[in-house]
Image (cartoon, rainbow, N blue to C red):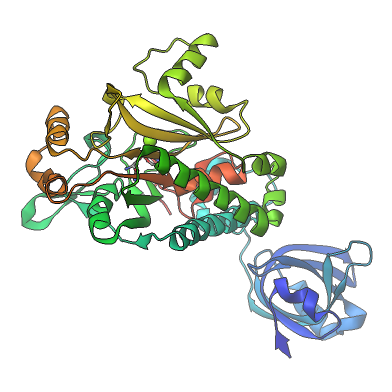
Length: 432
Ligand code: 4AD
Ligand code: MG
């Protein structure tokens, strides 16, 4: 007998097959009838246990089943009599692998804290399964785009001697006789070395921010894709980001229609975002907010409410470029047209979502960079290698970093970032 997966049922109609998985749901029809919603990771299907068909002995096994028990089912699949594209399985036998204890996650509403404490089980729920499948698509779509466009994968280190994104959010780790190391906030600085060898590079891995923010968009450990390219300047940097994000949108729409529907994502809105992006300067954005009555200064950063206002009426993502240098990182290149500004751009997703990418052209002048490092009060010695890159064949270059979870969160329309990573790490949560 052939062992198949739920996704392949449509190709095996009328044949006796075996599937392996779990009981998602269990319902009594009558004394002779049981309905099992069976799932195996690739999908779920209703299996029907009818005593006259199965025989007394096999039917008795079915009666032992509980929610989330693991089992093999044996039977013949057919198309649902009324619903096209929906299948069901007439059971002839089952093999129980493990009878599950009373499952703690039931049909009643559970609080977020309870679900997070049971994350190892909660991830089996259809919504969580769908979110993790979309994450898989987004991850590989990003890699595919970069691989097809001449970027080399370049793995930057996780334990680092210095900060890339400010010293206030560093996780410190004891490092033998050398004192302290820090968990990486972004691989960017290392990629800037990589481009001088390989031209275009990217990394993709976990990064860490000891951020004391309890918002629905912050994790302390999240996944970042940093890309960096030699000879690419500010405008082209934004073009690459736009192409990449539009490619990811199309890929998700093509591969995850079912998951998006299950999550009740507005598909039309996602389709509309696959169009030329908008660009505003930071100043234009401030002007807009002020015209809406927001009290905000020309040197201010945006908080979540401002980002929401900026994009709530937009259909496409928006770049906000040319920021006051005081509110951006030390490595961003000054704007030749206005030395008070830097050639950085954040990409803000529409529908009021907010930032998904941070990027910039990098400062390639040794002395200006040194000045910036000193102004920030950083230890010059630990940035010596980074300054070296401006001494030995410096070139104009740019890059950007995508927060994987933010991108997945926006694309899947999930409200809280904790649901788009298998095991979220947050200010007040490290278990399980
Ligand atoms: O804007 P950020 O801080 O930029 C950098 O780290 C640059 N070095 C990237 C680069 O140019 N290579 O972070 C990049 C993105 C943000 O736009 C956001 O999507 C995400 O990382 N991000 C977070 N995601 C979840 N939780 C947090 N605490 C995040 N902080 C940033
Ligand atoms: Mg940022």
